[in-house]
Length: 281
Image 1: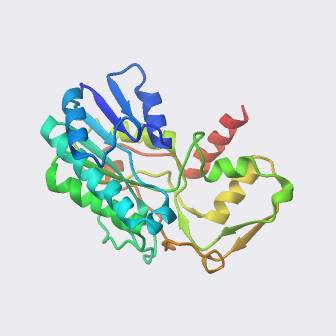
Image 2: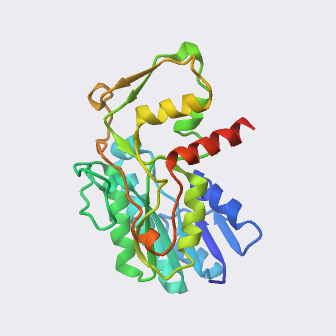
């Protein structure tokens, strides 16, 4: 596929990794200050001027607890904003990738969720992202919905960035052991999205690093990889860590439909080890 690629949410973890991989190609990356996706007229005018062939819509309200505190803002961004981008994509004749979340599921399933399992979000974040999926489908046929999970990278504040700067005196660190999902490297996800966009396999796809662990298991793997045996770690239950938003106990995703067209991601432990080597260097 040739033509200009537009990335919304270019200031986020995924947006930065997409921009790095699109460097030197026909690409326009737009951060929050450059494109307010809740402004329908601005979105339509901006994208009409660019006339893209592909829009990767990564802009979103992603603070799970923050969405619970301000549901109206989350809805404007994740649902209405997505509809604005999808409508502009349709009018420009562009394909679109909408980046969604594993939190569209309620976590009651035994085993990983498949792309067409029933959705039942527990939180405002999950509901508004699901509404974004539905809104995009209303107006756009050439649409990839990409659900992902527990994203991390070298950019910004995330789960790993907090652990890489921890002091031994900060321990014991307490992490939940009864909520599981797929830790996913943002660079791996960006590469997989660009590969998927080269296919005609429109529809719902799960793109995550293979395998799942808990917050506790993830923290333990990070500290081990960093050689931080001096930091004490304690496993707790979700009941011991109250949050504004309800979080599914099992949010593991399986990459089935993307694999069928040749798009795969490596195991999460391998991706994490590679990431730790990079930041150490």
